[in-house]
Length: 110
Image 1 (cartoon, rainbow, N blue to C red):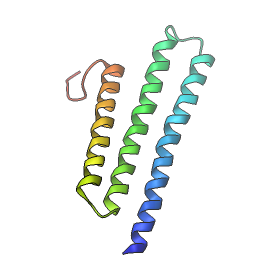
Image 2: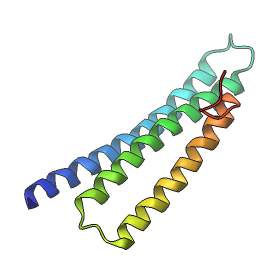
Image 3: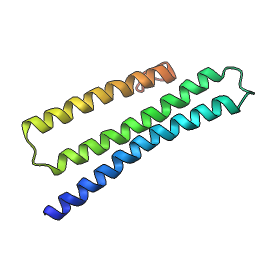
Image 4: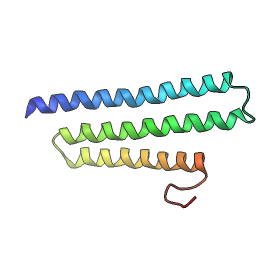
């Protein structure tokens, strides 16, 4: 059982790295598109949307990594509370980014 915990811990660290890489490469991609593509009428809006989408995806991946990392540890009230606060903060950030990008909440009709 201890070997599985080690593997899952390693996997959660890899997933965290993927989440950070998604955000990083999303920023690079967004900035490149902003400076390269001059045919767009309002490149600032496209930059904000691309940045927001990459941050949103990266946050979702980081939440998954946090859940995996917490599940493998011996669950204590403190570790579960820390996970709940992290997930709550990241969920609020995700919702605010969603509203910022699309002008509506995800559950609202188009």
